[in-house]
Image (cartoon, rainbow, N blue to C red):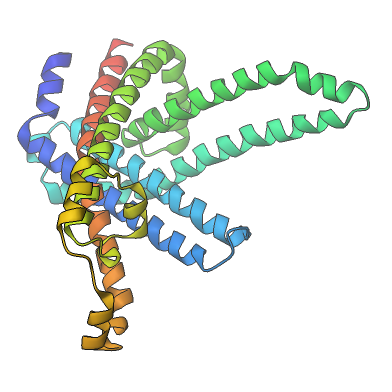
Length: 311
């Protein structure tokens, strides 16, 4: 099948809706778990290793959710009888692949840790008398290129490895096939990723900026009642001439009168209401992010198939 035919087939309304909802589901789960872990970690000091562990574990789960979403979309494109592939069957297959995606994420994390470990060990050469500072100074440019090279490998692996793992049940063979694929197609892969990541970033940036201004207006209309807006939403909201105008026109909140009317009963359900509003915002944010990510994952799957067929 030609590239254009594959592209049209993968972006038809039926398949795109299925891929979108799968992406939305996994991203929502990943962000929700990350927020829960970060909330638990906040109970500890930010300088505490436990807080850092919970925070990084949350980010790691988000990364797994992204890989799972991309792998699920490739499963849909990879199956020959995709017209018989119902959303439930695809979801079931994707869930079975989650352990594989977790192992892949751990391998990528191990590669990152090894990369940083080599640099940390090299930094001890600075303790050599007289020559140490000179060695470190002369090594800044090689270290920069080393970091750039390793970062590009990590990005390529994060995109290609999950796709290849879908086509085989052997993680080690998938790893070898990933290295072989990148060896043959590293130029095309880098060019595609540079262009696609740039477009993806611009799309998310535009949507994010729009949400910031809309959030500022929404807070003004809502009397700036903080309980309706989680702290992170308040921090990322932007003021504009419209939000300032609305803020001057609407009445101001009066929490004292609410407390007088309901007493301590209003405080009893406050934490529950805060968590509910936070989950609503996660649900809404993941829904918006799922659109550009679904397009990116779908396109990546099709481009990968084209590069693989050319070899």
